[in-house]
Image 1 (cartoon, rainbow, N blue to C red):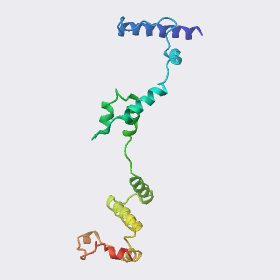
Image 2: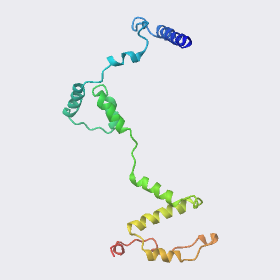
Image 3: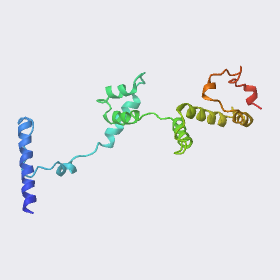
Image 4: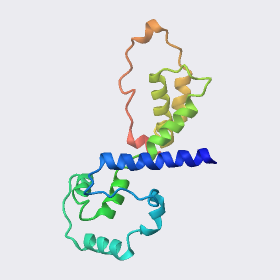
Length: 177
């Protein structure tokens, strides 16, 4: 117990030393013996009053709208006028934008690239994801997929070949059927 008190006393005196050395004596008082812990003053600190917050919001809402090409910079510039609102606005505006579609692609890609199929090339993965998306949209018919699956495999040497004209044409009239 005495060791604990000695450590505490050492910390108190070092705190007073740091405050004396690094602060201007005219601006900061040296803490007294009973005034060491900042948390002792926690009850005396009060949150902003509801009237202050309401006044800030009312001032913001009553102001004329301004064109702001960069909303983050606008709130930074007005942090002194709207301190609470600017903090809240910057919290929300700094959240990275996401797209559900991108998340779906990653989820679908994870389903496509299981541990068993981990050696698919990037090109094959893109093609399979594209094929799946087109299939979901109804752009690819089941019979076309069946025909393609029955085509003969190409050798690596035969990979340089010409596709017949119109192989990549999507006809809107065919989609309506």
